[in-house]
Length: 293
Image (cartoon, rainbow, N blue to C red; front, side):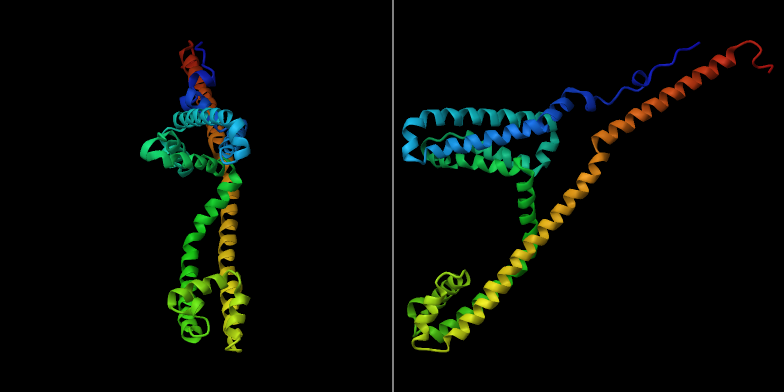
């Protein structure tokens, strides 16, 4: 009687799911590994900040420099592990390329004409964005809100320009420092839009033009309370959309690598059972008297 192979022997699992690259991918994607990278980023940020504090830069400068060098080496090793683990997927991930660019800047020499790159070491702290999922969602939402912001920015620029021309015509003589020309008017109106010292500007003009308050009140209502709130609404809407997409991705994660592995195991078992049935049929067909029956 022909012995049938077990499912694992009949159809081996894909090499990718159990090979060295898969184990390395599981390592770099493990929560403990991600938390360790986050802690390293925070420690590196504190070490970089020591050089900017005179009281600490003296006694702790050497220790901070050592921590910085160790952190840079660990960041480079971590990126190397991720590159090997993900292969071509590494280059297709924007966050991975961001991490690579930040670390590459830190690896450049900081002498001669590139001494300014020494100040750019602090950019490594921005890796905290890619390491923390909630920060990634916020940045993704801000980037997703850019198309909606374009039209709002256009509306704001239009209102600012029209108001600047009107203010120059109305208040150039009363306040030449603030509204003497179009450039000064635009800068002053931008300052008023942020709520910075608008009452001082308006009161100065109201000394010679008592009704000038109407212009500033309407301008603030339109820009500060209406148009600027549109930016907030667009960002909130983009963040809600990003959260919805993340929820859908989390729901579909069950059909990811684990689901594919389960399907492969079931398929292997089915093939093994099929091989066993075929073996039994061959054995029965070969017995004497089977054909006469």
